[in-house]
Structure formats: C-alpha cells, structure tokens
Length: 323
Image: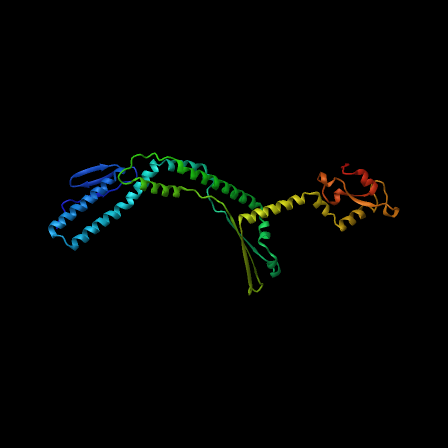
C-alpha cells in the first residue's frame, strides 16, 4: 500500500504566511486563509480512504484507519481554528474595540492585593485575654485611611465600569458577512467569551488578618487567637479614631485634663492667692484655676497656661486672652 501524495504543513507566526508544500509545488496563503489547510486535509483524508478502499476492499480495519486519520486532522486543526475565530472577532467586533477603550480608562483602578497581616506577641496571659483585634489595628491606623480610600474608589469604579459594560449590548454588530469558519451564532458566542476575558476586576473589599499569641516562659503553653477585619470594620475604626481625635481637640477634653492633683499644684505654686488682687481663701475669697489662653482659643491644660484667680477677677477676665 503506497500513498502517492505527501503534504508538509508549516504554520508561521501571527502575520506571516502559511506554507503548504506538496508534489504539485508550493502554494502561499494568508493567515486568514487557514480554511485551505482544513479543506486540503479533508481532501487528503478522502484520497487516503479511496486508495485504501480500492486496494484492501474495505473492512473494519480500513474504517478504523480512516477514523484515526480524521481524528488526527481534527485535533490538529481545532485549536488553530479556535485561535482564528478569536482573532477574527477581536479584529472586527465593535464591542471588543469599545471595551478596550473602557479598560484603558479604568486601568488605574484595576484590582490589586489589599490583604494585610498583623501580628502581636502578648507579654502575659492576662494581656493576651484582654487584647482585641481593633486595638492592634489602632497601632497602625495611618495605613487604613488610604486602604479604605482605595476600596471606596474601587467600589465606585466597579459600579461605573459594570454600567458601561452592560451598555455594550446596545453596540451594533458591524459584521455583515461571515467567513466559512464562523457563523453568526458562533461569532456571538466567541464575542461573549472574549468580552468576559477582557472584563476588569476591582477592589470592592479588603482584609486585615490580625493574630496574636502568648507563649509561657517555659514554652509549655501556647495561646493563639485571630480575627479578620473587613472594609466595614476598618471604616468603623476610622470613624471612631476621628471622633477620638476631635474630642482631643475639643474644650471638653482639655478641661477633663484638669485633675485634682494639678489643681493643687497650681494653688501651691501661686501661694494660695489670686495673682491679680492677692485675695486668699482665709480672707473668704473663692479661688479658681483659670486658663491664661482660653481653651476656646486653643489654650492647653498645662501648668504654663494655668493661673490662680479669685471669682471676681476671673469673671472680669472672662473668655479673653490677656497677654
């Protein structure tokens, strides 16, 4: 049994021609004329089948050989045809072209790794049992504001991107004639696959993995705990920290720093008398500890900004700064 025609197929890189060489000479075809490969392969398989049929008279062995040859041809050609279909869709689809432009606009907001890990080693079992994940996270609060800002931006970008992605369905298909290797339904299916592959992902959440442990001095006992803080947890943490910061800057906080021991120190420093008129408590004067620069004007509760005044002098001074 002898096959008179032998074909060699050389597939070039993208954009280069494909070479089909045989006994009839050399034929050059373009990248998008790969259908010639398939038709020639099918023709060759038919010729082999006819030769075998004429020489061996048919039979199960011949049928099996033919099926093997056709299966081999299909295995070789199918991946190539898949790439050809995808390339044709990417070149001609208006939706794909529009999605490329949208992706360029949102490339800076694409998903990135927003996972953070924190660990703390407790010095005692009592400290270990009193630790909370939020307490450990407070120690690195400067990192959470940009992290939360990224997630907020990512959520906005995801909403806007998905809205514009949904609008692609209304983009008309500009292809009017389909080549033999793809039809309208197949074109739509490949287009959906390409669009799904090009669809960007965004950071809509973040995670802070907090763990803490305590190991006994002899190393016999080990206690471990962990908690994951989500975007909502970090947002609530920042709100709480902002309230604490505002409170520290408030007059109420400054006045709360006036402790009985500080009041006694100021009275002792000023000789238990009003520094304006010299009145003392033995003379029946009611002594007050006054802020030299009022708290409402940014005055701090420190010994340098405190003085002893009697009630009339304090009332006369009022909420003013007298340098």
